[in-house]
Image (tube, rainbow, N blue to C red; front, side, top):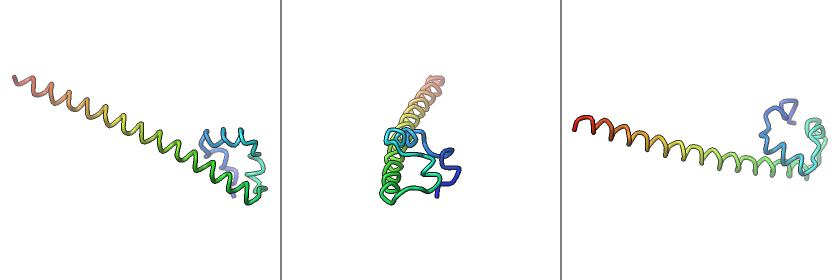
Length: 83
């Protein structure tokens, strides 16, 4: 199902979780897994999506805050030049 691109495109946290859960990546790539294992793989992927989403949102929020602060400083500096 995942094909050979599976291990090249999976987030590192997913690989880490798979390793801690003792899931065999070769079995996943070959499609040798049960429905229960497939659900577990999906659950782990969902956890990784949540982790990456939270991290990306935090980075975006922090970046936006920094940009706003920088723009406020630039406007203040510009206006001070005319005083």
